[in-house]
Image 1: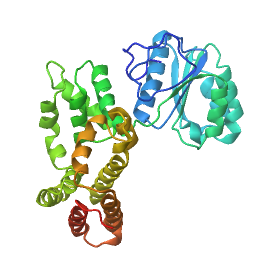
Image 2 (image 1 turned 30 degrees about the vertical axis):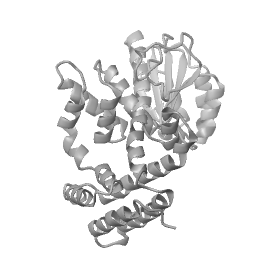
Image 3 (image 1 turned 120 degrees about the horizontal axis):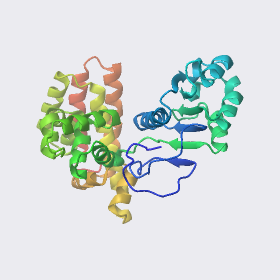
Length: 354
């Protein structure tokens, strides 16, 4: 398996099962032939999981161009259709079978599928994809016990997203740095597909294929300056006029009210965790991991922490929870509820209410 960014050096030997987390960019290309074996791809990070599946299929097609490729959802299979899909056709001597949504596999097919994975036969390249979670875990555990090759793609943590962007830029033959990657994450959000698409767009429009802060702000500046997180930053910084102005503009341009409460809740919780952990004498990377933010975000939290106390943060979080229920239907005017929330949260800043 090449993984999402196969150009980086890594260990020479490869385990039968590996978790692709913060080091998804650091694994070598797997040179094992795809036929006669099964690959198990699991985890909720669907972009990277799909790339792993597609890479396996592409290598199988490159090895045997005449192979028939069949993609099926596990929930739509029965004993006959599974046997038929794995058995090839009259027109192809080899088969690449991709079974997705493994969590939905009918229980009565577990034995048949496990037996197929244990011995696919030399003319079958088998890929099994599970989205993660507890559903279908029994068959997942049985497949792992077979020692089939397994790739796990857990959800990328918030503090890993800038590194993901850097890796994505390199994957697309471009260059950037972590600071610029952080700006892109702030502008586009945490969805990896959106980030990958933004990287592609920016690099395609860059003659030297260098992603810079200037290019990010030029393309995504409107989104970066008037987003729910920008409103939240003004609120936590005590800038009432700026927060109210950005809030009204954001709502007028279609930003969902629930995104504002979500951003406020996220920022307040990060600030609360920072206040709890800043005296633990942790290194910045460890503190960032404990807080759940990328390391470059610690400067913002340190700045905000000068004007916030733990009790004030806790009461602000409670106020956000109330407003969140209001904008989801409990209040007739979501805009008014959010404006009142802005002023309420700012009122908790700078004092420890006891």
